[in-house]
Image 1 (tube, helix red, strand yellow):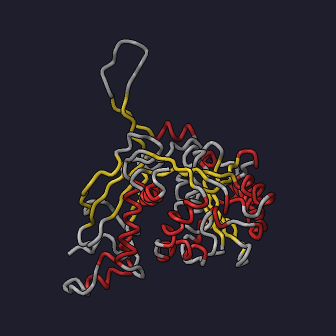
Image 2 (cartoon, rainbow, N blue to C red; image 1 turned 180 degrees about the vertical axis):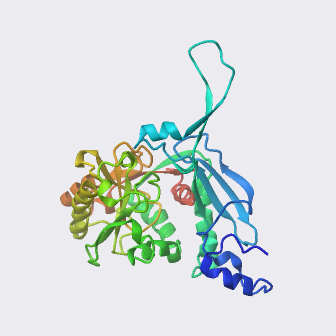
Image 3 (cartoon, helix red, strand yellow; image 1 turned 30 degrees about the vertical axis):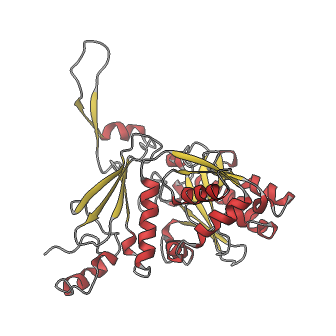
Length: 361
């Protein structure tokens, strides 16, 4: 019998010991040791990737032996250009169509796997959250499915009243367990290798780490840290700043008391990224999403060349946020904010309910 594909090595012995028992749910183990997707049965294509935006193909399905579905995202990482000669040498060609007699040649290109991965694959499996309730896991899966499914985008002008009536209750209904992965990063239980800086101050402190979306980032296993400055992958730079405070859920909660934190994240973020990667301040974009993907305050640091997640109705520049709060501490508590989301998003449903209660105004 082959061990369950979602079991990490440390849990394999448990798997064999309880293989015949129905008391252990093998779906509550970590999906971090997959060797392939052969045991993944596709139930639905959530996104065919044709709409662009770097989403790729998104599949909903079930791994053999699991009681809960998983979301699998398959996308193509950027072509690495750090060594163009090595790229050319790593490409094998096969004719794509007959020669036309003109100056063109058309080929399929096959990149040597040791040079760069063909695909990036993300496995989103809430069933691995052992401390979460079944309800919390189901809500988290529903969120991933909703955000990954091909759907039309909608915008809503959120007033302070709409926030209090629709958005705030939506946030309160999100299980705290959904933020467990954030707290593990902040406690340095996970992704320690991705940490670039930390100020442990519980009030104004924060951590800066590399976002997994940055697939071309240099890593210590293959590139010495002193070679990270000017690395070709910095054209796709994407890092995150995570606040140690747990009482700031979103942009709406920011007040004058938070200015030391915000200023430090802006200043230290620029300094760390400049020193570690050599990216100058004028090439760095620092912003906050609203609504955020998860409700623990965090800041995005990207190269200005990165063009996803920066829509004007979603991304708010950190320097502008600081300026607004300096002039009025209650700015984000009282102002109207335009929000973008998918038409299947549960939050959009809350907004429509709010509008309906107002008579469609």
